[in-house]
Image (cartoon, rainbow over all chains, first blue to last red; front, top):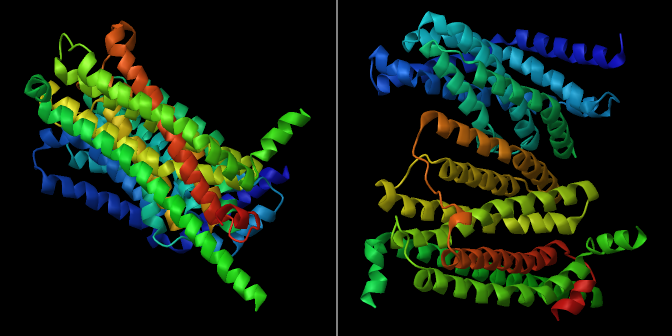
Length: 225
Length: 56
Length: 246
């Protein structure tokens, strides 16, 4: 196997193993997502018809905020114990290794959030037929968010109040993700075809995959100096 | 003249808009000039103290 | 190629830029002042009232130029930051840092003037018009840049990190704007701010152009002043400063 692939797989495996040792960290964003979603009926109305109308926004903002919570820890520990420096010095493409870390992070946060969303949707009056569309849309969207967030996490590495700063930096950049994703979710709930916004989401994800790891690598390098 | 200030009834919106634009224009000039002035003073002070240190 | 590089690298020299900025400032400042004053007068007095919006349309003479300025300054900031990052020029980083406050200010102006235009036109102070919404996001981008710079103590790291952020932002900006326009068209929210420039008669267009050019020159002048301050603050111990500040 080419060294690059071996290295990438190693990083992936390492991240997943580390996470398995502390499952509570994986559960926290999910719990946050659930709590935030539950607050909306309490703060607004219990009528499912009305909740269904705001469900796209609620689900997306909830998923976004939960992702942001988890992003702070993307690079933090590895930066603290020097692993990140080892990655940078390893001779393997740094952007690719960071991409692997981001992928692992998404598998541990974005993907579980996506899988949880249909259940929360039910609580908001979302019909079952909308679920496949919601899953597809959130999967793409949370992946793009993880990519964008990696750049922010790299820029705010080791800073005090880094979490708030990370959110402030990432949220404006996440506007297109929210716009297209929420629209796709809205169409899915209405039972209409969501291919238009879904393709746009896919385009964002592809753009993110090509550019974000490079920006994140530059950001982390700057932060490690 | 008062017709001019009334601006066909839009006065309450037009004049504040022009006011805040002028405010932004003035504030940025003032801040920039003050920043340069402070930078020059600080540079002078730095040079004065460092040359004192060297001559002693 | 040799002379081009010499010219380019001279721009990397702080004392050279400091002197040049000092010389150029009045050449931008005075035309700017003349154009702005003339533009304001022409816009308020000389331009005829609009057929539909009456006197209210005159807000365009402050709204459109500030909106233009807010985007143009961001582009300048990102370009300077990129040059600083790629060619490791401290002066370029200083220029980027000098842009941020001005850009944020004029983004706020564009939002406030936009709101003041909106209230008489469609009855409410805020609408999720695509241009106003995009300006709001732009303000957040500026604030994020300023906050990141403020949050990093080491100047070199602050320069480079904020440069990456500015570049990511400038790549994202067209995508954000497109997505907001797309979102707005989907939801058929009110979309105003339509003053199609080509169809405006010259008496209405001329003040607008004067304000656009005047404010752009004004930005250049203010930037040069701030740049000089930044350079002085960064060149702590350099010997050339002695001659310059005595």
